[in-house]
Image (cartoon, rainbow, N blue to C red; front, top):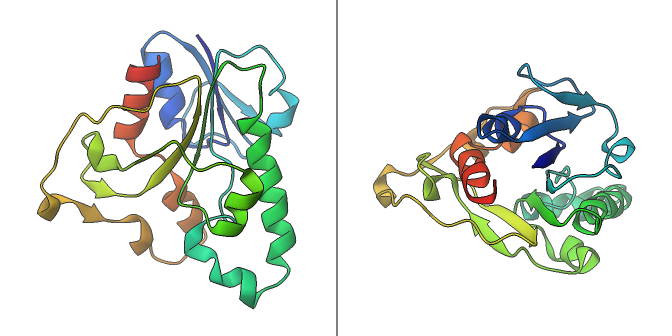
Length: 190
């Protein structure tokens, strides 16, 4: 398959699809953190090409439920949230791509009303073998929900995402896809 991983700097999902023989490319405004096929630029420049599968990770900064309080404390964020929702819908409504997954965390009610539909599935890294908790919403079109492959004891599941220390790399580290989820995507959708 020809696979576009939109808004991915890490190359984690891209590399899992490549390992399985697919033609996969990541795309982001920033360079890839790992060597491999990567389009550095605005994803809208290549989104219209012929793709079999799209996995998109639009920025969640203004849509995530975890930051909803900032909408009320910083009114300028409402316009940024509107832009974020439109960017999200660009992927969710890319009808020329038969198989689509748009990934985001739990979004707040304001963003949900603009996007127009709830996530089809929520997964955690520990569902697939990484011992971490991180609710990840998947808006699916043409794809089946991911099947859980691992059951880890509750006492062995760790919180890491929201414990990231402050700093310039915090947002990127928090948004990076866990390898076990990337593996499940490539194995089950590839």
